[in-house]
Length: 347
Ligand code: PHE
Image (tube, protein in one colour):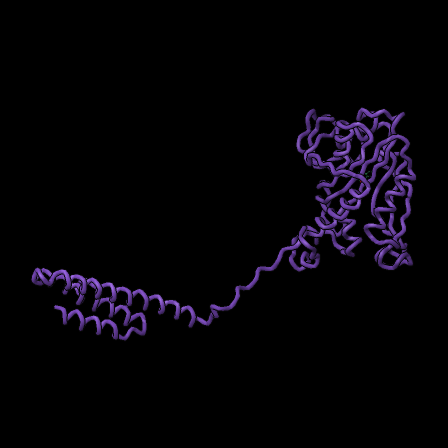
């Protein structure tokens, strides 16, 4: 028996295992139920008692040896197969492309930073609003066209009557947030409200039914139009560069009086006139004005003691002017070729 064990060990050691087939042959010959080693175990009971201990040890060692060789060969064959598939396993993996911030997020953050530096806080409010906060308290007359179904997405008409202050709708501007701030805080108030707004408009290169705004509000004693102008000039210079000029054109909003629209000098032609500014040298950026006393009163602020200014701009519009993107839809399509041009540090 001893000799047979040694003989089998030598055989098992030198048996050529070169592929899956010879590996399987090896298993059948040595390790299977009908294999050599198993049959030796069968013969073990005939071994004389005094030799049982030594023979048993040798037999177990042989079995262990044959099993180890089987497992080692199996492993090296399978890794050799992967390697021969052409992949270089020592190569570092291909790095994932790094993500980048959306241009609207970049510009929103930049605008917030600019106003934060001069003491504005950020306030937010609900996107689903009532007529009261979006229109009525902002001095919109009952029949104002902005309330029209054609402009506003209504969620719930309460009484069926036109302009019910309880009507539920998607806010059309973030001025509604400012109403909420004025209702709950006492002057001095200095805040900006960034957020998504919704208008029932056909999607085109210049308009979208969803876009983003940042509106600003300052209320204190003795706030004048000159303060508004100075803050807007500061903003324009921080955002577009030191050489930019601004101009204010008279305009109308129900919640400000007087109202104005602000243009910035065209950053492409420097004000000489080109096709971006349509030969005017100016680009329209935002609406602004002195908060109408009716609005202050509606929000519980004394319009005799306090005055204030407000302004509001579309973030997409600001981003379009800054990056010279001429189609608003690009901001909503999430085309990687567009987005990856706006790489910034992720902060
Ligand atoms: N709320 C106005 C809009 O959505 C912008 C604006 C804000 C104008 C504040 C004047 C003052 O167009």
